[in-house]
Amino acid sequence: MPTDRHLRRHIRRHIEPHEVTALGRTMKAEVRTSMMRTRTMMPAEQRAAASRAIVDRVIGLKAWADARSVALFRSIVRKAEVDTGALDAAARAAGKRVAYPVIEGDLAADDRGSPEVPIEDASMGFRWVDDLASLASRGRGFPEPPREAPPVETLDLVIVPGLAFDPAGYRVGYGAGLYDRALPRFPGATTVGIAFDFQLAMELPRGEHDVPVGVVVTEKRVIVTGETS
Image 1 (tube, rainbow, N blue to C red):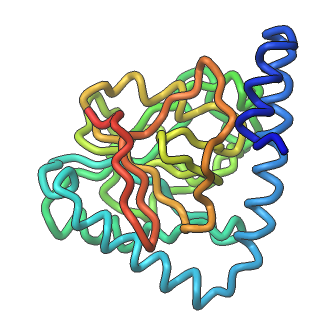
Image 2: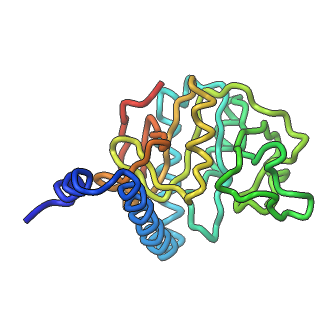
């Protein structure tokens, strides 16, 4: 009986490139649906304990110890994401500069919080944040820094969210491609994907614009993918 990997190889040989792309998108959509459902069903106490273990493993990384600046993301409770609050506290206690993602320029949401352009076309950067209370929803699905926050030019380490990761560092996010477009702007940064262990997959569909992370951390393991700068 053919394995999934054999099936994927057969598909690549016998259908056109644009059909492979469409198939990859369909597979990613299925992964998103499955992982979101499973993650939101995770008991709150279990999620909190796993989040603490993930934070401990991240803080134990040499890349974290060496980093003078880190980019985090603000966890969204309704999406049952890994809680990054303790990472923010640990970074500040260690004297690191902390940044958060923001939709930039003319592609930002307007003052009423409604998007001016589709999120799939948006450009994401990072801004330095001194106070978590300054983060607010601006119509893009995640809390962002205020527009007047100083922009980030370089970063040592970026914590990357995702709905699924594989051992090669490829990920399935929420589908907008924001991190895939943003990460190449910070070539010197170590990129660390964080997720619960059930979000690991043997192999994920990937496209030509997908950018792998250098390290994947779950509550049970640390995977160095080979993409670490």
